[in-house]
Length: 127
Image (cartoon, rainbow, N blue to C red; front, side, top):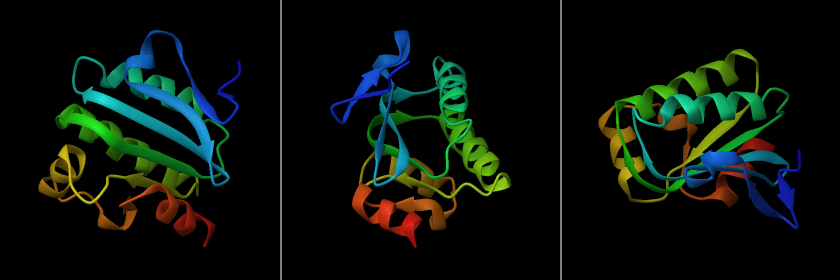
C-alpha cells in the first residue's frame, strides 16, 4: 500500500476523515484532523500502530484537531509510551495555541514531547 504520492498524504480507507500518513524530515508523519474522541480513537489507534510498526522516528501533527477528549489523550499517551519503550523518538506537533495544545496542557501532558511546528519537531528528532 502506498502512503505518499508526490509528498502528499494518501488517505487510509474510512479513517481518512481523521488520520493520514506521510513522511516529513525523515520521520513518519501522522496527521490527525477534526474531533478525536471516544467514537474514533480506538480505530485511529489501530491504524497508527499498524503504520508505525517499523518506524524509526515519528511526528504526530495535531494542529488540525478541533477537539480532543480523554480518549484522545489516552491514545496519545499510550502511543508516546509505546514508542519510548521501543526507543523510537517522537514529537506531538500542537502549534502555539489550539484545542490539542490546550487539552494536553490541562492534562499535564509531557512538555518534552510537544512541539510548536513540524520543522522544529523534525529538527528535535534529528538531534
